[in-house]
Each structure stands twice: as structure tokens, then as C-alpha cells.
Image 1 (tube, rainbow, N blue to C red):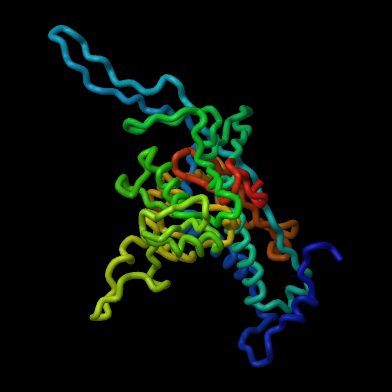
Image 2: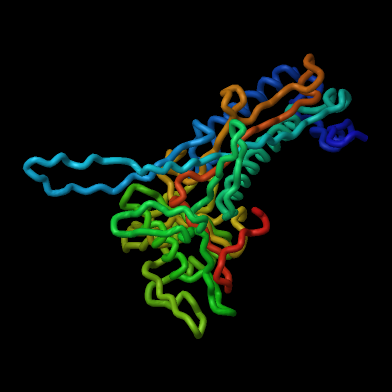
Length: 387
């Protein structure tokens, strides 16, 4: 049997029970085809909420960025000409990779005779879910994999950067803070052997790395901490005055209290039954488990984050230009988003059709994310899932 076909036996196994009002042989395949196209359009217009906070659309596959030069006023002389404000003489080229991803749906003519609309929709919906999963995976791979890449754009090799990763690039200064080419936002907890983690000092170190670049709530950013439920369970225990690192060779007393979200017993219950405090700092992300806040961070648990790792990012809002990960789609607007293409039989495209989506990723705001491995080692290692 050819691989990947939906056949009659599949249909008979899932036939609707007698009495259901759906007529499995009364399907207008052209109507179903249009319905699939409309569902894809909805998907393209309404990207996953977390992806919208993590990413921004790329309008150019290559960008030239110059760091601003910090200038200051000087005392004027009676005859002097003041110096002019300038930009940095050297420009950094930021690129974004690009790949095509595809999957096919195929049906035998006998299967189509008996398939119900619900069965066809279920297959289409599974493809839509797979496309979102792939987008999320590619964005997470960009976040967790610390190695820069190269992309061939207009027949030239262009760097595709990650967060600051000690690649020799010197980050721009912020106020009195300066950095060098060894600066990295890929951290390791370096806990003593046998020490549990993360502790509060680890999370506060992530906050410090953001603040060194002016990334803070006060400057208009929302900080999100993505954790696996394993690390989430540890963070939920953070309380001021209580050592968060139960190891004989180290202590870590939290600067903040972890405050659960409203769905997790958050807030302070007043005698009148009103809830005060704790809720205002938490901003839920639809579709994800926002369990609470620690200091400036909204804590989101998700199993796409490998156990033993923490990823934090700063967002300016949905698809804001300052978000960490750029998503590049095709130069031609007709090739953007998930596409549904008819197969060899143009009269009956539903029989064999192809879903294709071309996109790539890269990081422009290299200060906008910090990734940490919870380990006894002193250096960061990319998780195997995202190598």
C-alpha cells in the first residue's frame, strides 16, 4: 500500500453511529476545499499567542544595524563649532534563515465516498496544529541553540545571530555599564554537586542580565520566564527569608516572594472575601499555564521547555519590533503563511493536496532573551532536543 493514504478501512473504523444527521456521502468536496482554505487563512492571521509575544515579522531578509554612539554636550567656546552627533561607523549585518516545510494529505476515491465532514476536518485540523507546533519548535530552537548560523541570501553568506553568546561582538553600552566580546546570555547555574535548582539567585541573575541592557518593566518591557513544570515547582517555593538553595555549601535568600496567579490560589484574602495584591502583576498568556509571578517575571510552564532549562524573554507586545525572534517569510506575499496546494488532479484537489509553509528565524535584539541551564557545570550546553 502506498505510504500516507487514507483508505476505506480507515473510514469504516470511524464511521459515524446510526442516527447521526450527517450524510457521509453528501459532501460537496469543493465546499470542503474552500472551508480548508478559510481555516488556513484564519490560522495565518491569528498566530499562537506566545509566538506573537516572542516574535516579530521580518520585512527584509538582511538588515544593517548600527549601534548608537553615546554623545554628550560640551562646553561651548565663543568661536568654536560644536561637534556633531554620529552613528557608529561599523554596521552589523543581521540575517534570517529560510526553509520550506511541507506535508501531504491523500485519499483513495473509495475513502472519499464514505468520509464524513468531521473526519475530513479532523485531518485538516491536525495539519494546522502540526504547523503551529513546527513554528513553535523552530522559534524555540532559535532561542535554546546558542550557536550562530549562516544563511545564503542573495548569493551571499550572512550571519544569523542568537542572543549574546561570547562570539566576539561587543554589545552597546548602557548608561555606565559596558561589556566585552565574551558577554553571554547563555548561562549555567554551576550549582554544587547535589544542589537542587534553580534557586532564587539564578532567577535574579537573569533579571540582572536584562537590566544591564536597559531591559526592564520600567522601560516598557514585559518579562516572561518559560520553564518546564519541573523547574516551575521549585520556583513556586520561593519565599523571602527562606533559603531557596537547600545545600550545605550555598545559600540563596529570595529578593521577592513567588505570588501564585488567581487560578493557583493567588492574592491575599481579605475578611470581606476580596482578593488584593498579587493579581495585578500577572498577565495571563491565553492557551498557556501562567502560574504566577516572581519579581518582574510572569512564570509560564510548558513542556516544550526541556527539563533542566529556563528561557526568559522580554516582549514589547504582540509582534512588536523589539521582540527577540524575527520570523522571515517569503519575499513574495503570495508565498507567505501556510499554503494549501492542489495535487496532480486539479479537478479534485482534495484527493491529494499539499500543505507548505516557508519561513525562517533569527535574532535581532540580542539583549532580549536569557537562557539558563540548571547544572553543576559552569558552561551552557544546548539541549539535545534543539541541537
